[in-house]
Length: 256
Ligand code: HXC
Image (cartoon, rainbow, N blue to C red; front, side):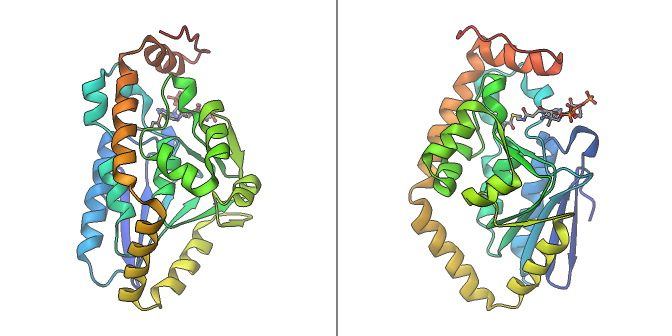
């Protein structure tokens, strides 16, 4: 099924979602994220589907939220357009999910991959949270899920500096689970195929139980992130950071 900004295919009990805005490295527009939430709702209802693979078209997973429409937002609007509802819908799917990451997985793109159960990366994958360079910080669950996964110090290093890490480092840190030389989708599909053979009710309950134990009170952490993140849209640094990206120049942050 073609949703417009992504495609959803279901075959042999395995669903694949392909993010499809390759000209902008699959930057996550509001329309795309809304479609993702609809696709998750569709999959939740489909009792034949046993596993999900999410990937990006054109050699990249996703280079983050679409910066253009975000640049001039004020806090109330920033809060209205967060991705948490869609990413939570993916995370809470009753089936296992795998992000197949090639090229860039940045900002909201990496946060989407973090909402999946597993990450299979190509050797060329570049993962990062570059938001600090735009005068903001990760606002789609990254401040909560990333430290849980790789530890607070490595997460702070990624979030404070905004540098990307390569697949080898991501593997060492537990940010990705399998690295393959080329396209990660076949490997992700093979893993999905194995998962699809396991007892689905037991698997679903295992997923719920691990997530509840691991994350604890994830929801209030995400709510705190959302408030602090949206408040940054009243700063000059956020406007400067995003305008600088769109004007293809280096930002000058004044701390205002
Ligand atoms: C809008 C984007 C984009 C983005 C890339 N593009 N990322 N447009 N939003 N996040 C566009 C570019 O403007 C360009 O369009 C085209 O995609 C190709 O990108 P280039 O920059 O020319 O490619 P390259 O030189 O290879 O650099 C790749 C890159 C760079 C390093 C990934 O594109 C980049 O830094 N992108 C922004 C990454 C980022 O800051 N992500 C975090 C976003 S904030 P044109 O028209 O010029 O060809 C975020 C918040 C999440 O994710 C929370 C939200 C609720």
